[in-house]
Length: 342
Ligand SMILES: [Zn+2]
Ligand SMILES: [Zn+2]
Image (cartoon, rainbow, N blue to C red):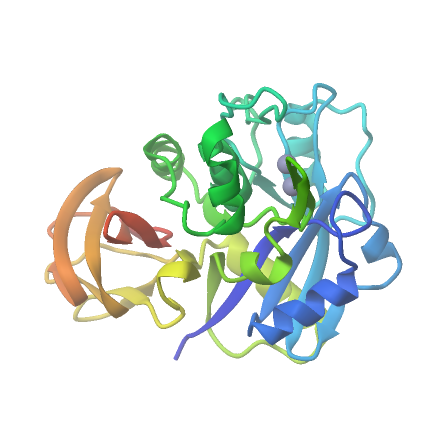
């Protein structure tokens, strides 16, 4: 029976522009019940080099880093490498090099647009011709929040950072669906947390404290068995799950989604999220949600079936790549990766 690990991805520490140490952040993650966190400081693997990866209580902390190009665009999360890559590389080159070295690479905040406050520039992904990336951020808390930020609503948004999250953009979801027609590309959710103080006129407040961010966008990994207690094995299990797209993401603000399940059942087999099987007559997509929501089943990038409720059995009449989106009052709650039927 599969089990689900819940974690947060894209975290900055004091080794770059974050405000807490690896140890402090890992402890906070444990307090809110996260099974794993993935740390990605800008252009440094200092925490990794100092041996700060490992289990902190029950929380597994893994350390990669966030790459960028000379123009400070094309941010890229890299895991599993021993060293930071040559800073002269172009985006196309660091994507290819990460893959060649056996690392795991994820495109960060691909869709960032910040039009309202010129003080905070955006860092979108522009190098779509790059080959060899393994995943993309479908949803990044920090970039969505910054996009919504306008002069008149700064205080409101800073005080209730999670309330203003809507959902991944249609543009990114359709890019992701199209990529998946030919290859497996993981869709992850990110928090991009720094915990930095933010000046609002005379006030300085911490927007996005780590603890609050850990209760927003989460990535859940569907595991074939329990996480190993052996660190190196556990690390490989986490990276393999991401590479194999055994993922769904959620916004905890609208409910704890770790009990979400989705699979395809045929008279002969069962295919889980991220999995691949042969299409057979009588294939049924089964969905279980911890709470009722508006559910949209997507096949090959197009809406295939919709219902409202906490469970569903959707007959499938043809091969394709299937995924599920669940919203509550129009706000994004759960987004699965694809199940492929050939
Ligand atoms: Zn970034
Ligand atoms: Zn970042």
